[in-house]
Length: 389
Image (cartoon, rainbow, N blue to C red):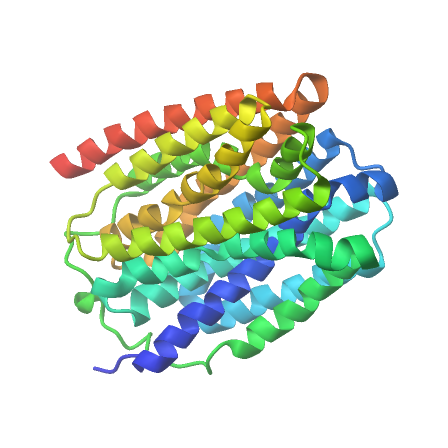
């Protein structure tokens, strides 16, 4: 029996995280550069919601199928293929896009690339990382969203303001090439690991249970997926300067990144598979959305870092539970559960864009807080069901 060498396994986790991050970066840039995109392309708040909805929609439609593809191609090839897709789509935005419709098409391609790389990164962790370190590895991997948001926040003062918004998308294509080159050479070691060596479990969860978890995750993701698109406009509406708002988002991303890694490391010390930690973090995310809804600068400045640390922070714990409960085909299982998260990513930004355009940002954040609270309750019920199992 052979296993992936430790150094190569760690390199795969870090490089895989970077690849997943660059697949999200075009979307994050569309959020933080929304004011410039409005001026140059005529992209309204409702249009921005559509951009985010299309990204998650294309990902949702392809996620379940691509999860099975990763089981056949392997994590390395899947990550490389997804990274190549981002090179193409980001270059297209930087050089060709002239209308909101063209932007939507390019972002849709990025969404499909993201749907391929996420289960691929999860599969790498499930097959190459020891069980007692998978929580930490998933915490690192799930920080990809915050790495993308951090990079996007820095891109506002560093690239977009002095050089124009197109330079930020061109830089994304360059980063995608670098991330793909950082991946370790393809190895057959992960394939040789017998299924009997997987974490102890009676069997993978049924398709029905995975769908239930996917739906519950979708409610929570509806609000979390709006952070990249509507955090900067919310900060500006509260009286924060645009450049300062970009730095606040960058700092909040760092805090969220550290929170994910810390939570994942703590989860490795517990052998039980449960969703209580996920429930708590989703509930705190709902509270953060309510702070954003106030429109008050002090409350918003507290709500932004809290939302980045919690509203997205639960995904690492959630995926750890999925990996432990589905040792036979973890890539396919996370492909199903993340499809629900992607559906939430479709509905959340679209509804938020409509509400913000017709009412206020506060009304939109209040609505998303209610969805997160509903998800927390449902997640707790599912956890009790799984424990009885």
